[in-house]
Image (cartoon, rainbow, N blue to C red; front, side, top):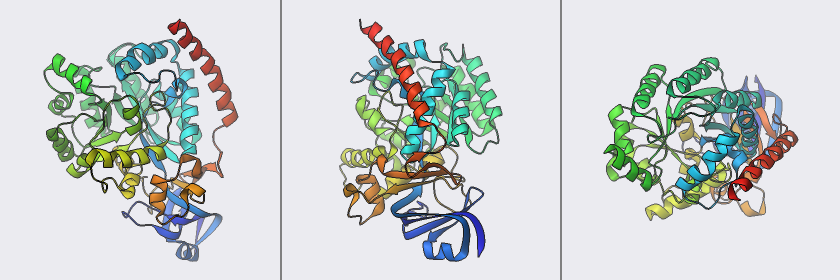
Length: 444
């Protein structure tokens, strides 16, 4: 027998790679934060001698879920502007609130709240797009959560930066500070083609190619956006990014609800990634992404929640169910987006979208031990004939009992281990009072 730090054993284990494999009474051996072996419990316990063994009867082990599109600090604006269209939601509600309240302190407290919520829902990695990315990286590192931090760029002055030069300079400073950090990676995060100039997009494309990092951008979110862009620029946003050279495997396009068949084919041929945010799209009536067509064309489709101000939660298990049902409804095919595919979207496809496929997204030897454990003993998941289908169609985030990142526990028996929940609640209530005062003043 060889020594290891930890063995985690459960009723079922879905490693995601190979596709469709589920071990009954499975286990994983971990040493120095990485997976050593995965398989049936009898073989793992025969070959490995662990300093600690965690037994989870009636539970399913999966790779940690990966949320590929968030505005984490916007949890503090949850419910601040409901039931209004996207353009009004942004211009009349969210941007004014951000102008009044966004600061490093706000991002610190909002990100901590978001991470606590995400960890409780089995999410081990999130891809963020917001101001003060240095603060987001600091909070994620402190909580031992994996994060892809967006180097935000937008063509107007904010509390974070005055102009494109300052956005890029500050972003590069964050990139340099966290280079080599095993938990923190970076992507460029220009907000959208309509809010970032052509010259700036071309600079970002050049820098992204030089550094070999991704570009995370809102793209084709609504038909109204397309009409306005076409009127102002004479072409659709996707075509503009094609002209620049940004439509490639390093592009993570968020939403992509309004696409022609030609654009779907081009997205697949280029191997781009798409962050599908079904619940946010539905709530804002933004449209419905043609996920089945994108997957068939060869695009890598992952899942995101968007921000809590437009969703209103950061529940990726809920997004899996919504994505599966919506995919069937949009395509008219009940076999579209089966549970196995949707779990891949929430794990290995997310890792691929963030350039992390070699490190996480599946439970495989050599990868970081980023693992979530879901209790399937509840009445709502009983009987369990297929644990992956039970996760996607029946389970909820409240069934998540344990979460590990690099073999370290972030959630144990439903209790957060790296974030002080009482302190998070206290700070959140302080921010809620301030923001509510602003909302009342604006409506009076």
